[in-house]
Length: 172
Image (cartoon, rainbow, N blue to C red; front, side):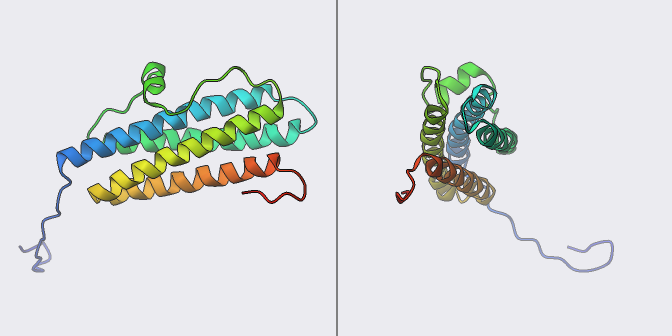
């Protein structure tokens, strides 16, 4: 093949991902999206409603976390679209696809922290499972996105776990 500059170029076909692998990757990403959206909503709620002596610290931490989750929701949904599938976008779809559980309203800061910790750990497991699907499909962009999500959830879990640990106790 010759270009406008007269340079000979050889092209190598790029292997495509099988449709069944694309579908599995999109489905796994949909679970991650649902977990992320539900966690975003819960974190934002706790930001609004936290009280107590750690109000300022937790109010700021929850705000940082829900902002990060909000950006992640968009990135995950756009990856699903780039794979050629519709991203779930209704509360009904999210509640059907999520692994997170709705619990009675947390009444104090410690309960809020513990609930967010459980949800970040669950969402990390969901991302890790989806990462295995992406690796099987040899879908590097999805792997990259999920690796970033896994790191974000593990870091958030570590920070929340640290708030719950007793002084002198070694956190997991």
